[in-house]
Image (tube, rainbow, N blue to C red):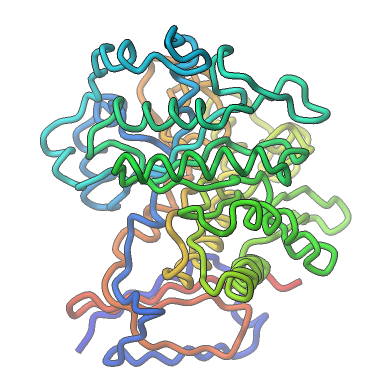
Length: 447
């Protein structure tokens, strides 16, 4: 006998679909390309690098809930080389190169972790991506066409020497990045440039020569809508794959739903990629690389979710808030107002994650764009899991409803078992852990 745990992740009227039949055989394993056990480190991650994670939360009960009950792991952070661009010196014996001896002499910074925190993972497996214009001025660079303030190195050997130096010297085997994307969301004018691809290839190659276990890839595109114009949009990434000869450790992009209030329909509409469109994107990339390079390539999605846009920033406007929620003011009302965006973001994250879970053989890492907190630069930022009371730095934390993603998947683990549903609009997964059967279902809205 199995204890059945069913998670219906997006509640809508089942009657709208007619009868939905899901058949489950908990005795039959259903591995995908040899991947049987659910690897939670790939999917259920908060956007944080672990640096002073415990002291930031500063609440033993909340910390225990996140780590021991929700089994939350770490996702992504931005900045690697960029963190050092103004702190390194040029090597007088090698103009254009970082002085590695001086760099190595800089003491390692305290990561602030307890012994218990360190023992939870052999490696934090955080996805790092770097900022634009990340390299110091002494390394020659070029500007992105039509984006003069965005610079990339022309001397890829000097740049790769610095990048690998940072990866090697500023981390240990526990906190060293699991994956590294050379630049976060580069301008579209550089996507097809050979010198841009050569930088990625050089860093990837040199990291392997240094014996580092960090996977290196890119191009970390800002969009993943490769199905556009009859899949002509696939060229956005395949040209980069070709320019790197399909030899990077992984290839990457970000994916978001972009949603806007439709006054006529009295509902949120827009560009929805989560679900079947994303399935098509993943399949298209693999179809291309199998045909051309006789292999499937790993994929990293270091940001994903759902945006509310063109209406009060990433929150619903005050006028729309009155329409949907009613009038109000103050911190509690603002938390209600942001809950609308939290629902849209969480819905996109759930649908994306359900898709990624269907492709464990190619998904290297996915990270929802759910930051742990953002008080150092924007206390009321829209994508924060924790905000200070009153949005005033130093106050006690208040959870936003983004926590629901981690709550919903908290118990899901174990081996994948056979389950079948003929409705293509239903996302579903079934796992058995001991005597517990977990069934996760997501019902996509009808078009």
